[in-house]
Image (tube, rainbow, N blue to C red; front, side, top):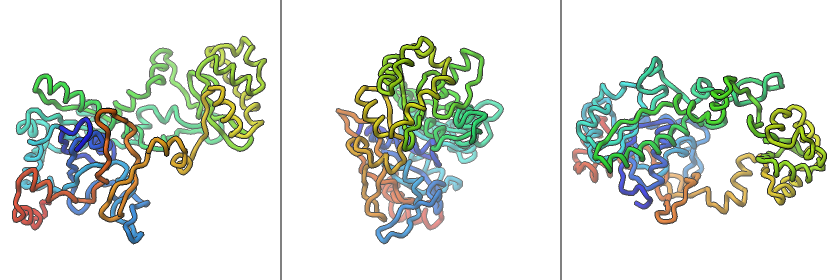
Length: 407
């Protein structure tokens, strides 16, 4: 193993996205991650297709692309945790691990003897991260929580989409499961903070992490806008609530993103757009003025940008250091020379497909570079290896567990 976390071992009892996203990041950083899945079925996302990964003959495998997106770098073992024998295996593995991730409902693992109290009894130093929809406390604690409903409950859908009164208005969710993904990222930072605390004190602990808490927390400036003003922000499409002009604008052949971040950039934009008079108008001189005059200014800006093709604007504005960019589909994203130069797609050997491509972790470490050698595992791919090497079980013992349906 390589990477800054190559000394850590993670037992991953989570499934779907938030927990697996966290454990994939930890695996990318070099930690050994053992993913525990249900025999025969595995992680739910293995079946969330199409599309499915194709084998060497071009036929669908059992693994959906969704699963591949969040499970690189792990070892998959299948264990039936509803069986006493399976529970014993998990406790034995937990004794050897630094971190345990789980996203069962509150109290769901207690009946299996795999809750924090039970695991702490066999490993007081473990960092036990519990991810739920609503946290371990509060009136909603025992409710199930999924990303789309959390985007709604947590306010994101109230500020995402076409403004009220315009065609297509109404709540919109973000195109990826951002509440899950951000919860996974908070889980990574949380467990690493807890590891540092443990290294200093010798004390393990449980982390209580909720999707709703995460969604509320990363409302960021929009939440602070509300707390400061007492007024709920409204949907503004691609526009920014605090900066103008900062939104998608029309060109003669489509749209591009204009992101004017300060007064100097606005002057440069106006010079290029032939709007010198606007730049000198006191009504638009500062960002504060432009935010107040948004409804008057944006039609003027759009009329100017609609006069030339997007490529012209991107070339000329970029040359003047006015932030702007194309609005790419994913084919264009992965064909972009900058994305390709940064090596954002990695290929890994796969036992069925030959190779599988995934999106690399965006972090680069100069002293401990990341390596992406282990593809998302097939179901139970490493069960025997882990039980033999980690728990020193014999082949006969493993065969017996398999015959009983425990693994």
